[in-house]
Length: 278
Image 1 (cartoon, rainbow, N blue to C red):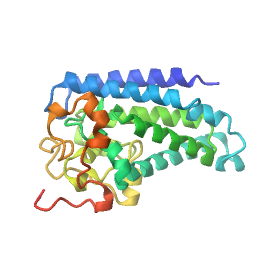
Image 2 (cartoon, helix red, strand yellow):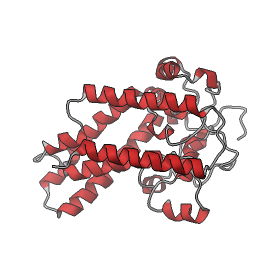
Image 3 (cartoon, rainbow, N blue to C red):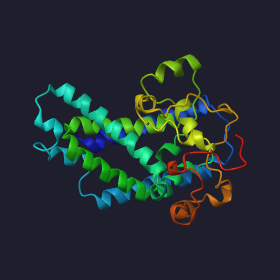
Image 4 (cartoon, one colour):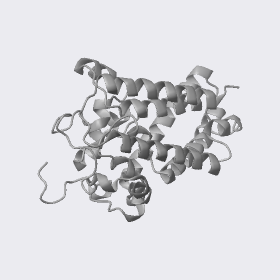
C-alpha cells in the first residue's frame, strides 16, 4: 500500500520550496506588510490545524477509503481502474468547489473562512492559512465524500496532494507571462486567476472559488478573468480588517468569534456596501 504520509510530506515540502523560490526570484506584487510576522502566524496556524485534525480523526480520508471497498457509488459499478481514479478525483474537486462556495454563502461558515481572507498580502503561506475549525469541517466533508463516492485509495491520495499543492501554487506571489497564464488556466487555477478571489472588492471576492481545476467557475458562472483595478493596484484582504497590528496569531484564531463578517457573505448578494464605487 502507498505510504500516504510520505507522499504528502514529500510533495508538500517540494512544492513549498519551489513556490517560495519562484516568489523570491520573480514576485508578482510588492508586499505591503512585514513578511516574517505573517509567515510566523500563517505557518503556526497551519501546524496547529494539522495537529488538531490528526488528534480528532483517528483515520484520514485515504485510510478511510481503504476500508470502504463495498460502499459508495464507484464500488457499485464496473469501470476500468484508471477511469475510476479520474472520476473520483474530478468528483472530489467539485465537492471542494461547492464547499468553498458554501463557506462564502453561509454566514456562520464565513466567520471561519474570513480568517483566510483577512491576510493583507497573498503568497505561498496564505494557501496554508485556514482556521483549525474550518480544517476540521473540511476533513469531515472529505470523509463523507469518500463514503458517497467510494473512490480508490490512489484517487484520494492524488486529490490530497493536488489540493495541497495547487493551493500553495495559486496563492503564490509569482509572475508568469500572460500567454502562459492564459494557457495554464484552461487546465489549472493559476495565481492570477485565484488572486482575484482575494480582492477587497466584494463582487471579486465572491468569484473564482476553484482550487485545482478552473472548469467549475466557468460552468457555474463564478469565473472572473481579472480584477477591475489590475493585479498591481488591487487591494488584498477584507475591508473590515486593515490594521496589521491586530492580525496577530491569537487575534486571528479569535477572529471568527469577535470579528465582524462585513458584507461579504453570498447571502447578501455580494453587492458593494452603500457608498462604495469600486
